[in-house]
Length: 448
Image (cartoon, rainbow, N blue to C red; front, side, top):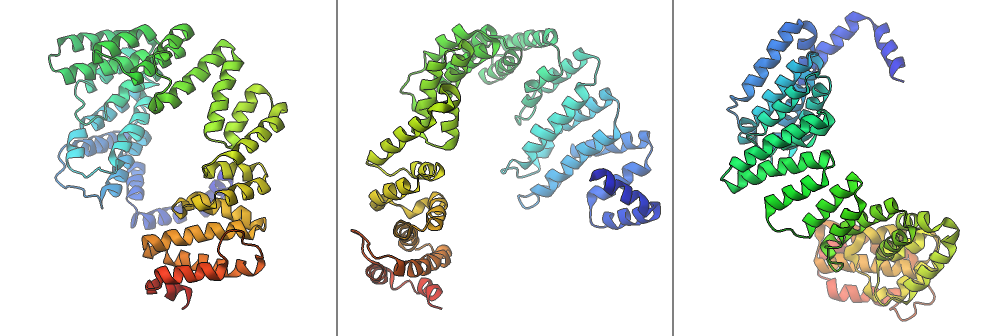
């Protein structure tokens, strides 16, 4: 497709393309930049980019939140211009360094509460740095540049260069970087500066998979360790292949720690797989499946215990779902996803009094399938919960949806003979008339 379009454009001729590009430049700054780059010599392009980078340090306009998207695009286009114009990796690195060094004037002159500009640094500028650093034959130069830029990081955007050092700097040079940062940490009296330096050591230790160094550095940085630190240390040991030490650290995390439990289980799962212990891995996956039943968690569990056990596992879970006393919409959706429509209908009817229209995202997915399967009673009860939620909250913006739900209930009612213990349609309609009859904006949408 790309080559075909390229040929078609070539066939248009140079005059047509030149006219089109000039027309585009009237409305697009990117097109203007492209024309400037195409018509300039390599040296002129270098000088043009250098001037733009210098202008960043002299910003005098403040970019409000309304202007921040355009400002972010402008910064991104500058980085694209560097990549297109500069082939020499040393020059390219110097330009990216100038961009990072302009972080203070950039952030002081914009409202980046949405993180748009920060993303330009953490993604675009970082990627361009890696692009040039990977081509640079002098690894020490790259390492020194990363360390120099990280001596000051008042806006938290330069750490990303430390975090990607392992992609462009050999292990031996990273060891030297670590030594330099450790010396800097030892000299700092300011606890914040000391921790910042040690944080960079942690990142480099993780990248070279040095568990003991990471552990030692985290302890030196924090003094006392919490569950999150235990998990971080265990993860680095696990990545380094030291499974036994990783397991020791994971044992320090309380099994009742709900906040860190998911990550602990994920690391244990990796650990058991490395140890070749499918039974323990299966135990974790079963608990994960039971805590959130879905086709994905079921698949993960069956991948370990064998897909030949699918029917037995599903049957046991369906039976367990049906005897629970509390409605769980993810369980209802699971029943639907495995084709147990009768089971889903029975489950929802059993817990109809627990339906909450505030969960409209999940309920709308469920009701669409049940309506297609011609289950009018449970579908009506779900639409009732959605309608009542809107009316009870007085959510006027959703009154149009509420009116649609009531019209849907009118349509479904004639097909229902047995409402069970639930009020029939006319009774329900009378109840909401009595409770919400004064909400004229709603009724006007129902009865134009």
